[in-house]
View 1 (cartoon, rainbow, N blue to C red):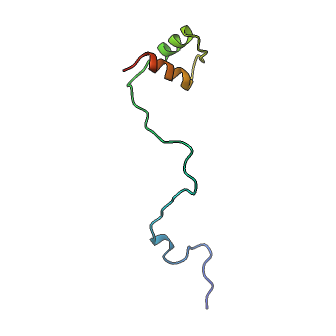
View 2 (cartoon, rainbow, N blue to C red; view 1 turned 30 degrees about the vertical axis):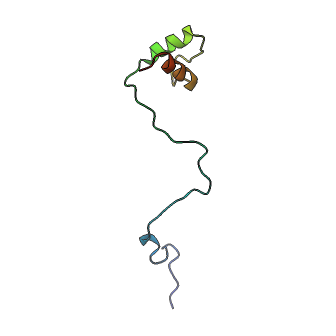
View 3 (tube, rainbow, N blue to C red; view 1 turned 90 degrees about the vertical axis):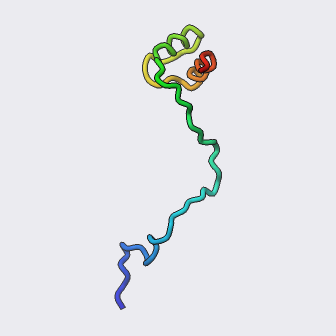
Length: 75
């Protein structure tokens, strides 16, 4: 009797559908971010500085700045 090849999976293993159910639910809800179109981040930075937020000159805007700006500029 020949030994099984250890580099190959057992027969039929890859023919079954794969499913994954996490043992623990995610600690957060995944939601889509509504698109507001093109937004001038420099304008947001200027607004944020005028309203007492500290923002970096480049890079991603902090979430609290973006949320405050969106609340002040609905639609």
